[in-house]
Image 1 (cartoon, rainbow, N blue to C red):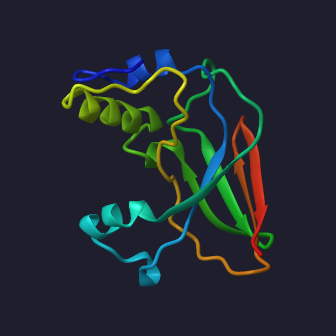
Image 2 (image 1 turned 45 degrees about the horizontal axis):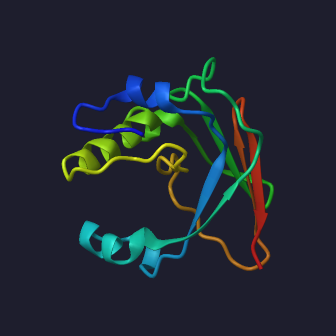
Length: 146
């Protein structure tokens, strides 16, 4: 398990069994994804579903901070980013979670599935759209909306 306070990126990296590419599907009720923090929390962060793919990869030899991501919608590139878009390093988001939980006497249980946060802005989709997201060194995730 990961515990705070004092959890840091190095502790998170040491605790990771493997990484996978993943995409969160949001169902925001807010026009143009404009909302304040209280509203998005009350709306369960607009989370609807998630899709994972690729193959499990040991974190050794993968620089999550500089890992590139390319998102295509209907064959056209709509977003590009790197892992550093998540608090400077994706593991920083997990450390922050562990520290928040630790302040409440809780921990992240071993074996937990964690999505660290979006590296790109949200992209609106509608029925018929196809989205593919390529993650450098990890593989890709693709979906079609109906």
